[in-house]
Image (cartoon, rainbow, N blue to C red):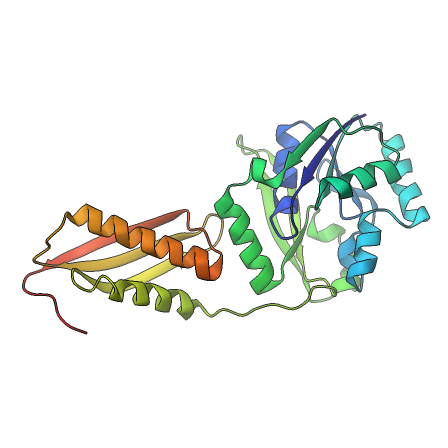
Length: 273
């Protein structure tokens, strides 16, 4: 059996990317948090997301329970799986899983940084910390509804670049998650307003919109005041960099793009605020 691994810290989007990554590498099977997934469908095991505390979740994910281990081993044999992807938080964890399941030597080690951009990883961590969302790479209908009741939601359908359906994800809120941090959307607006005050000599803030789905993007509308003593593009680039750095430093959000639209140019001396 040819074994691949995908490692990364919790909340960096490994499970979200697993189906697409496995498809690209032509890997039919995935081991993720105690589940065995084959061609986008659960065929054996139970998810660590079902556990009541962090310790039991780790044990479930690493096949500490003998019956759980044997169930997954038998399913692997029954389906004649030739390539498999093991997902974990570290090399140590994926090596332990491979050893427990007696899969053999790992040939290919990959890391979430290899397949996701820094911006994607940071927004995934932001969503985990603020919303508490965990992703399982199996369809909603295959998750036992009795475990989560209202704390389970349909995720997204995953398609290849050729628009072929690869699989589906499910969003869950496990019992062992240690709560969330609520950040109101107006905080983003206030942060941008604060930054624009530093550039009040030439720019007048009008409105801002932020997209956090997928790659995080920010759209800012401003008007410009004359006279401007420096190159306008240099000034706006400095504003972009200031916004980028503040979002990274204070919210751990790496904006993939910051689009500034100049709606009008105002004549006269800069107004004081």
